[in-house]
Image 1 (tube, rainbow, N blue to C red):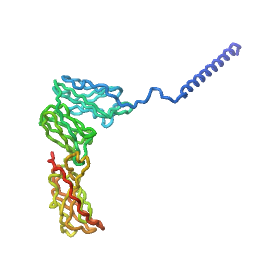
Image 2: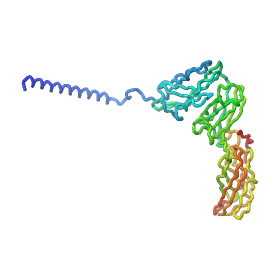
Image 3: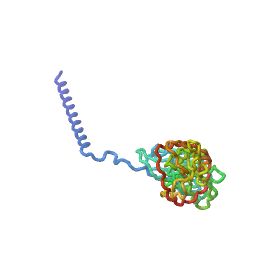
Length: 387
């Protein structure tokens, strides 16, 4: 190798050492900068705020407009996944309704429109329910409502009230659905959901005669199914109507005798699978208790449970339909003996009558009869049942 080549090779090694030293020096500087402080990571603080609704188009209160769709615009990109519903469409209601609304996602915007288009001269209420989330999972716990009319005015009349589960003495909170339609016309269906207190409002409904139905939408399909409790009432709307609804399962099979439990030697508690009538209570003549030797043990009385004085019941303002009854016998049952109990024409809350039978075996040791209870407190009269 010549002197020039050796010199070039030497310069190459020198240059490489300089580059490596510079890289190591820069790396040390970078590491020092990165490790100097454990402060806020790049990009600012984490986003923990739920999406904010910026505006809705058309503006609420507009009249004489027929938009292609209603736009809900947010301050950030919205997730297509929602909380409390199967899809975005489950978080929006159009009233009056023509079926499931068409709801589309457009990043920061959600568009809503009816499946069959907007009707002429109709005031619409579009409700966004709680559950909208951003891409980080921050979820809105509040909704929004906007109202506009394809006609020249927006009615101020409304129907409002509370939806109760009558047999359970509680309100039907979020998940309750209330519908109203003009008597004789089911093509125009106004709809509203209940809030956390079971309250509902059907706003901007023209005056007239309406059928109102409230039910517990247990499977969230926005339709009344066979085992879901409901109540229906007719109203004449002029300005405002306050209407509480008392839902119960309308069981067309009647109340089945499920069990009989011996409380003491002369007291038996009967349980049924659905609520019993308040206007046609069971009488001693409808209950027969037969001993093993086929003799009848007389029934002295049949009584429902004592009235509940809880706040929920007081708010209900009416008696709770019983599911249990207590019968008092004319004489004591014998230990370890089996007795057949028959009930006839037991009427449930829906008005359907049914017979029932149950075999009860007394335990080897029977508790002594309890002293008679104090007279029950007065309760409001039983209202007529809306079928």
